[in-house]
Amino acid sequence: LKQIGLAVHNYHDTVGAFPPSRMIFASPPANGGTAVNGFLTLILPFLEQTNLENRYDYVKGYDHADNQPAVNTPLAVYACPSSPAG
Image (tube, rainbow, N blue to C red; front, side, top):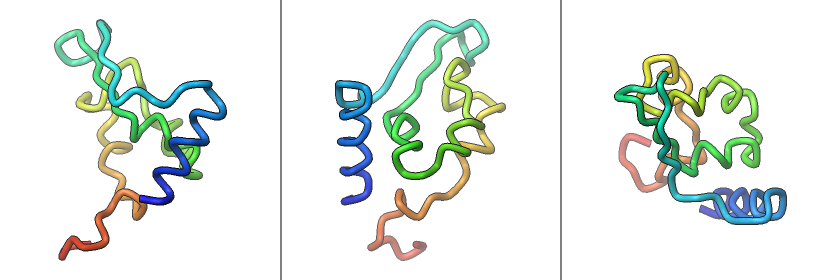
């Protein structure tokens, strides 16, 4: 949680606002014409995951097939330490 909190604050220092919890907007290439993106993607560069963010297409949203390789990449920082599966 500390790393995510630091990333959110670094995003704020860079952009001038905290990241939105999600972004929803009309996008013809997206599934159903609506792209949905969450803040966990927006803060990737502040978690030293710029390469992963570069593989993600915000115009298509998280549920588009083209974004699944990036979406399904496990990141230790997003794993709950008390989860039995890790």
